[in-house]
Image (tube, rainbow, N blue to C red; front, side, top):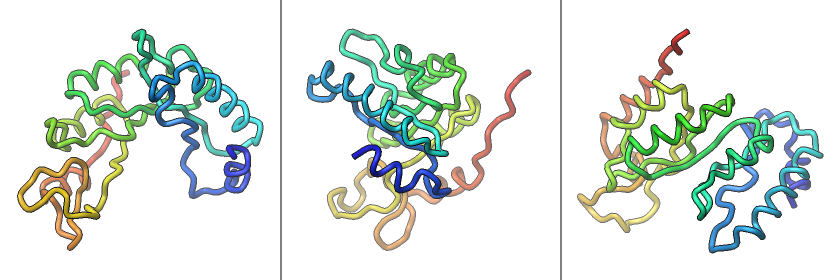
Length: 178
């Protein structure tokens, strides 16, 4: 499966990178998925795609970090976290030690006070790329007036918070200190 999909798009400029495993070790299947992870990375590398390969950073149950143990598997570092900003900042500092670009792939959780106002400056200061997986709210589960976890726009196109749109538009990386 891995080689088939990557081979079909290995030369596409529409693919930013290949995220081989998003949540490895889920449901207590650590040993099984870690071995499958290594096999999937080898398969992905064997295709010779132009795009970089990554495996999301994950802390194992024993407290060790899979990415730090298997850094050779990724060309860039991806992670997701809904932890408080200070925990995310510590994670970024740890992952930056690998000397690769870092991208946070999932982080917005307004109910936990993770929002654009707090995290975009953190990402900018640390040269961390970011994605927000929720663009348009697709259901009515949140209800009127409820805090949306991760969507930016309502189904009618109105933003959850117009000031967030301005923060996104104005996002720039801070220059790294020399």
